[in-house]
Length: 226
Image (cartoon, rainbow, N blue to C red):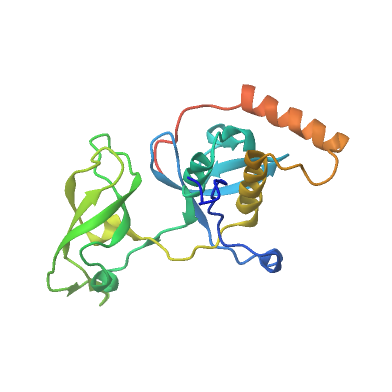
């Protein structure tokens, strides 16, 4: 993808230098390339690489990405779009917010009993009168038809209840570590010179990163989100 001048076009998540000191960043989730499911994650830096750590899983499942992994701007944009603010569990009182065309993140039916989250689109809502539980809390009995964008039922429609659905957040802010990595990958794609001379310590870290990528990663994917 290029602009009219022929230069690569990039979409970099919202971030400003003034925000660097603000630690009130949204928790993030990541769509793993292994199975296209969404997982709650944390990120940290290893030299100029980005390490994605899956919440609730051991370090063997960590994924390490280098700026050199991306061959063009489309690949970098696709990687950026794998990050977003964590989706939030839908509550029984929020069912009115869903309508035909609403994008959600939901648990997909699985014969293996796995609980994984994939993106889907609401295609129909069958409204039912809400009840109350023993504690007086509102209980939604509505039925939602979901068209799956990913997962084992991709391009198919299945039914879901409120407990299966998470609401995708509009918060476009991204953690500074992710933004810094995207900027470095963009710099390398454009062939721009690095800022400052590489120190001996940075050279050592680069070698450590390479060793981790080559010898210390399990390519298997986590079985579920939690």
